[in-house]
Amino acid sequence: MKSFIAIACLLLAVTAIHAAEPPEKFPDFALMDKDKAAAVARKQAEADFAAGHYRILVFGMRSTEGDKRFAKDGVEVKVIAGCVVNDGILDGARIYNEIMREKLKAKLGRDIFAGKDPTESIPPK
Image 1 (cartoon, helix red, strand yellow):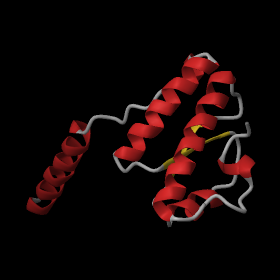
Image 2 (cartoon, rainbow, N blue to C red):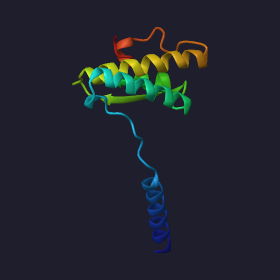
Image 3 (spheres, helix red, strand yellow):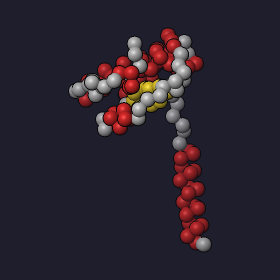
């Protein structure tokens, strides 16, 4: 019985710690027109890179192999939409990814996206 109580208390403590962490705020490009999404994406990519949050934004049905491919370089693959997208999502993801790609190339000294299928990891222009 003591073990059960100890385990229950531990689970409650872990749950409370995770509940206290604020959820990550990320712009919802779907609610923006393409110009607003592009401006917000530019600002978000700059802030994320400065904070050490390296991401690539993706949408639609795709393989998860890219997640593993980029994870080894510390780049998170963040899904921002499903198969239905609008101009805000398209331009937001494109601008964010262009900025992040250039900054990561400078930081890593190589293009980790070279030779990859661009439609899988970086939305087209």
